[in-house]
Length: 198
Image 1: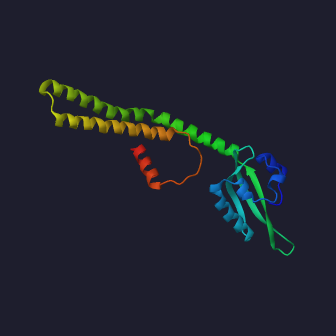
Image 2: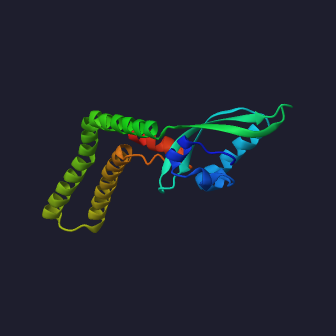
């Protein structure tokens, strides 16, 4: 890092003296984003243009800021690349607003789904109620039959698991996202979506 302007200092809290002469990637970029950023920097130094690279910078305060970076190579009078110029835009508030809009949309959808969910939960609850009533009547008339009771208790357990799964899906859907990228199994995402829709 050869230079650091006042806007970057205000945004991160790091002064020019804190960063000039240091490896910016190691000092300011979150560890899981460093490899991707280095690939972009290498491409820029090879003469390629880079636009719209998003990352999070660590601040001196200990938190992070979301940045949209654009890079271009700096050339000398012989057109040889001698460095690069990076221009960053603070998009932290934009990302926060987008996350709020997504959460509001999810909660509105949950409200619209409430009737359907109540119906879905009613089904396993009715099965549990009827199964327990049948078991009580059987006990009153015929006494204890372990195999019959085991079958009925198994049915009740199945229905409680079904109800719990419905509630878990709704809880996951309504939970506020942490907005941190992480690897996901697309099969699980598709399966969960299909289960929710069904």
